[in-house]
Image (cartoon, rainbow, N blue to C red; front, side, top):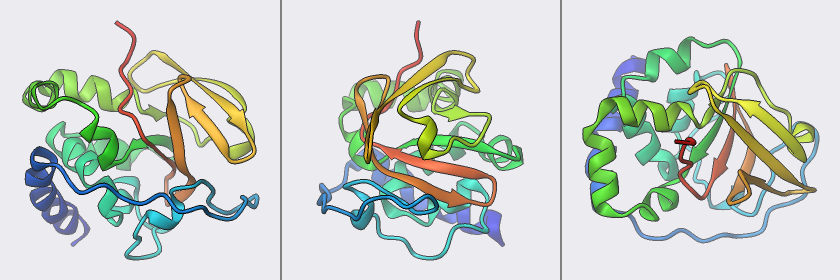
Length: 187
């Protein structure tokens, strides 16, 4: 049943990934608590259900603003890999992040499964990262390269450019930090 819901979400999301979506508002959210979410984009994330018991791909599918990421993960055949890991952190580009990528770059990426897998696994760290580790973090991704995090309070960036718009979202096997830019692994 879960696989069917994720697949159905992906089937709906693939055309959306190619067609673009309307921009979303960025309302302010409260300060973080040790176990809560934080960031200016949290209130704009429409959540359909509690995702704390769902594996990372299904949890991501519960957020319409992550539909392009879910679609890309299914297309790259990463669902089983990501859901099979016991503790991961996903720096999840939202749909607005995908809109920053040119149509030709996105088409090229989506048509090359190997490159798509490389880019998507660069957004995943094979350990759960707590908010207090983000201020000066350096982490090895599943892709094999390093990414860095910096900032303080509720204002954090990944690789100095991607802003965390909503962080510390819990899934059964993951912590999700929604970012506003698609990261590119080092060449």
